[in-house]
Length: 155
Image (cartoon, rainbow, N blue to C red; front, side, top):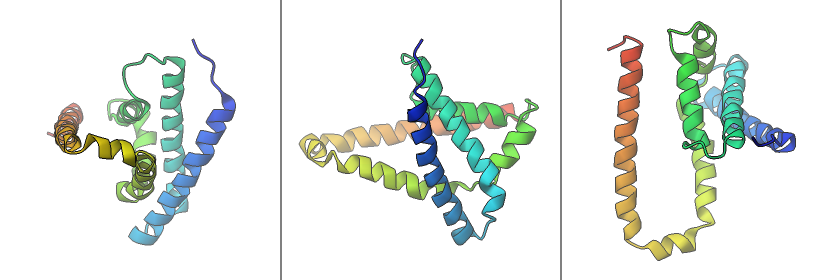
């Protein structure tokens, strides 16, 4: 078992909180949604992400990346069959998806920006890889959505 580095998690929390403020501000400005009312949902999202990071740190050979693990944890706590969903689902549901994309895509762009030379070396092969990855992700998301909706009895 690995130890949890508290300093690292404080840094994670501060970074995610900064992104959360940007997300909630975008939600308030762009969608005229209440900022303060969505704070508990954003805190829950951050805590679930920190839980996923900690599981990944404790079990480094766990086969899923932290973002996939956080998605699975989020789906589990939102299942209507579980009593905790009555607390989690409405709180997390107060945070809109689209404003969340803006800072996440900005961070993704910054991380790719460091690797421009490596991307140039891949040339046309990256297009084939991208098409395969996008197609696979699309069908995986559709399968997950289908499964969750079936479990919830919505379809």
